[in-house]
Length: 359
Image (cartoon, rainbow, N blue to C red; front, side, top):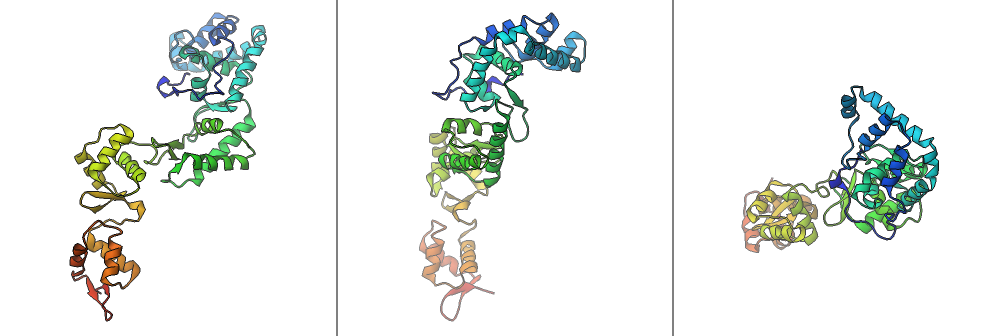
């Protein structure tokens, strides 16, 4: 029932942080649970990890301990929460739950469970208790984790739907391998929110709403895109090499790429290993002795002769100087190397002295 502690954000977001709640969540849950029969109280304590402070137990695990089915445990849990909502102690704590509602509202009104547990509890020991109050309070609606979104909570169902609609539209608008600077990405998100009727939202709230999506993410350089892209969800040396070259903006020697990975990402990168990874990946093109560029910059793979062939196929008959100039846009080679390759039988001169492909 609790979020994985390793996944929780460790850095609070500032001014709108709602962690300054006036009440101690542990004390409120203790008061609420005291009004329940013993078995219901024990089931809820186990389900939410309220006594141990650790991860809540599953329905199946509790059922085995009691010698009853997981469905019966679920019924006891549901009945216990319903009884709490109808109790006098719930009414006595109405102001507390309104304060929690305001905290969620101030943070954006719809939040992932991970964000709530990072932003609102006063300390780690209160996380399970805040989660319990969210489940008990009639103010809060939840949506289970699915393919598009993390588990999330809201205080306004209409707002929650509008935000999710905007996130889905944003995802569809992004090319599979595209990366956008954060400001541009947030501007696009704001555009789709306005189309859904949500206007004038501050940047901190927008960032929290982006955290709802499982399909959108940010890479270590602060650029945004689809999480299935290797440019966003970084897995290996090749992905770090791509971001290093993209940040540099021009071809780099493989030793420079390895150093760039270490400097930018604080990741160990041996030059020889980096070179091997660059060779294997189609995103990179060898453009000189140990020099690599990104294919997306317009560089085509192949030796100099293949580059000449591609240029003549694309542009037609060209003079020697025109070929040299165009090849050097794609390869870091000497003029003499290009001239030698022009002597290959694959090329010939036409009546005007220009080079064409031999047919």
